[in-house]
Image (tube, rainbow, N blue to C red; front, side):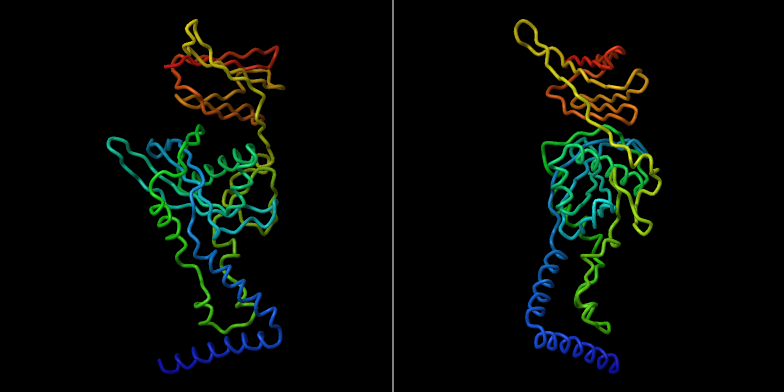
Length: 315
């Protein structure tokens, strides 16, 4: 025990000597190093913040409503480039009950820059959401519904619960004090787990290619699937009213150039949203302005115009 204390004291002395040498030989470099450590320390202990919340369904192993909280977290590294996987952290699913409603919450965190880019581009946002759901399916062995909608609240459940869920998973990260227990070099001091993406799961967004050394969580996705970019088709949505201006139904016309058969169209409709996926070429997800009667909803495909028309009576 006494020997261990002496060794530790020697290593701590080496550490401070390195800093003293750096301060004397390169004051500017010393200042930058200290500022970098303070900055990375803030990142390491920064808490995740809610960005948006998705509502969908778990179909298997047991059908249940699912809320996915997408959070921004400075502790998650940004992708090295557009050709590299996107690091993320997936929290443990938590089953909740409110009065008679039972549902599950899953918290998912990304680097803030990733979510900022997605917010500015609807296609990238849609791709990120799709791949997030695929990641959850792979990691947690769930089967999720393809239909989802973005809620009007940013987080389901309390912020404190979300922080505990996500931050508890990463509680084993190495900090500067742990590094002091090892024989140190200046390069070792400068390295921190904040900049190491291998500590986090990663997913590959469409259009990106991964080098042989890159780690991708969703390995089952074929290269052809990764390369496909599903476009948002041109569409027109209108609410049909009666003579008294009472809303009767919603009519949606979707133009699908290159599609000549209704069998290629996959349509999912709920009371408040709609999802159309067509032959891996088009994808359209809409939050509906009024609640509709799903049982009375009809769809027809006009082959000559490659147009899908959906009529949705209101409840």
